[in-house]
Image (cartoon, rainbow, N blue to C red; front, side, top):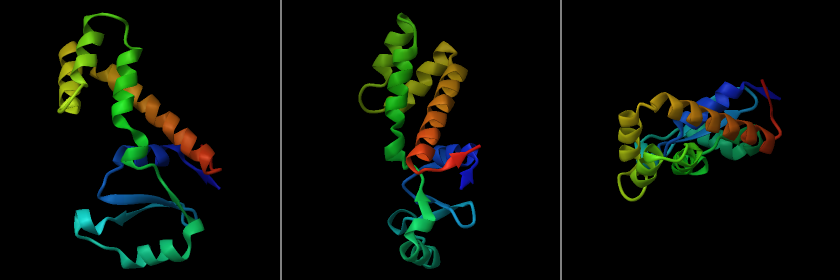
Length: 138
């Protein structure tokens, strides 16, 4: 079985509490199983299929597997010592860390550096997911 790495990266970028994202190895498609508690939606047919043919579906990483905060923290460590690094380090501590982080990278004009770093982290996660699931990627 072979998957496009971008398919896995897209699943990582879209991870949320609202849906369980799965890779259907039979159709080579990403499928979304809604969480009824969050969305109020159900997909009984897909839920039954996943239950009856569990080996057919691979679970993509959830937002808890991705650890966005850890990626931000490692980005701060990646930066050279100085004011920018200190301010970003302070920004990610406590409540509102994600909002302050975005404001601080905008203030320092390093948004593209962050997005490139995040893309590399997602790619590494996607490659690890493929290895862990014995899936070849292209």
